[in-house]
Amino acid sequence: MKISVSSYSYNQYLRDGRMTQLSAVKKAAEMGFEGIEFTELTPCETPTKADKLDYARKIREETRKYGIEIVAYCVGANLYHESDKKNAAAVANVCDSVDIASELGAPIMRHDVCYGTRVNGRTVSFEYQLPTIAANARKIAEYAASKGVKTCTENHGLVSQDSDRVERLYNVVNHENYGLLVDIGNFACADEDSVTAVSRVAQYAIHVHAKDFYITRFGEKGKYEGGFQSRGCNTLLGSVIGEGDIPTAQCIAILKKAGYDGFVSIEYEGFEDCIEGLRRGLINLKKYI
Image (tube, rainbow, N blue to C red; front, side, top):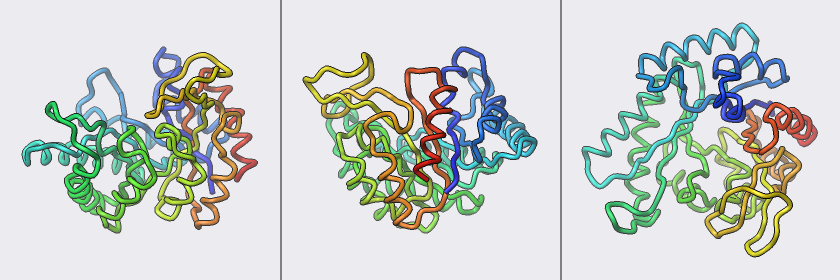
């Protein structure tokens, strides 16, 4: 396994202007990461596809300059709509992102699939959305194959977050160019034990995120203030890898046992300075690997 970092991990610095996605390449290399992934390229406030393609070329050159690999590109997506026209538009939009991933030189692209169960004022379960989502994801995987990019979905977004749901999604998509991005920490957002969840889906992993949280059970007092609520009203607060409540070392061992030998990308969401949080997290993750 190799260790990479998500550009999202530098969000504190990206938001206040101390860093750009382009300058994040140099910082990641200086910190000792072997790879970097990017989330939604933002060369300007409202970038066009042409703006993103141009920025992708600049980032690719920067990674060559500093000898670091681009490992993935991550984008949002909602692949459930109740009209053929809207579904076709959603697929086309994600395929545009595939073009950007290809220009970036990213071998893997993660796209989301849905964000909720309320559609046009009614409740539509994940199971109900699944056939439409899978059909659209399959079309994207087919297009991405022509561009040399492999697509995947992450346990992400509260709806498609449980290990059994992403496993079913993987099986229904049923395409050789499609896999799963296994985020070790994200299962806690759906109140699922990470060891059980990772054990279930490790065999489908084509990319991995390492993320850690301090978890405060409902009705208990947390070690720190802040955070957000899980689906079951527990409180999650981002932490340094190896310092929170996610059993990261065991999850890495499970992935190894399943034969995973790709990149593990740190996605830091902690409240401490992100550079310091990443520094300590990288030390811990190296030990686990």
